[in-house]
Length: 288
Image (cartoon, rainbow, N blue to C red; front, side):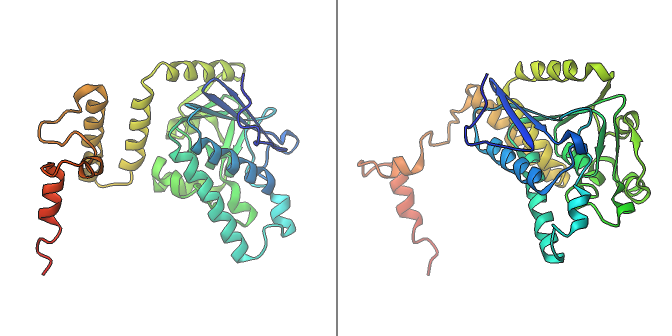
């Protein structure tokens, strides 16, 4: 078992690494794992660590105790710890950076959800690739009743996942919903018996580890980018992805490609090198 980078020291979050699988646990169980300023900073730190490491392939995110996360810590917000309007905007942009980084990791991410998954907690799940919930899970966006609005996915990612009409219902009414409704709407992948969450999560981890990891990375990248693009741009990603797969599988030698890095070829001593010739022919073409 590995514990990851020795510099990763946390107070409100636990991190462990088993082989190429990282386990991140929000660890404030006495307050339903509410996202304090410190916990949010620690979560951002671990997400950035995962972005930069090559040692991890799968990331599992969960909450300590019987809950996933109740969202931002309202006691801090009410105390003025978030600061004035400008400071709040800066903090929200920081959290958007965290969610964007989580969504764009070149690892497969799994939210393993028990109990309450509310506000910022739900926003974390929407940036993950898979979400598994227990039957007793409850979810929603109650910010409207606290006099605040979501800042990092509750309106934006949600609308892309379940459409604007359902996103309005979830946000404007502020209800807490049963896990099965999240499954029906497409927010979750699976709802399992309360005692089966860990086993179901590990079964998914084991299956993903059997896959072609480069294939998983390519598919995730294409799907994430394609959903924001028009059809023809999205098809371009698919075509380039297919070509990259072909090259990785041995078909990299294209007859009319150079087959070598242009700079390495250009710096070769041979004056008849084709790279030198074409660069000489191009450098002043139509410059007058």
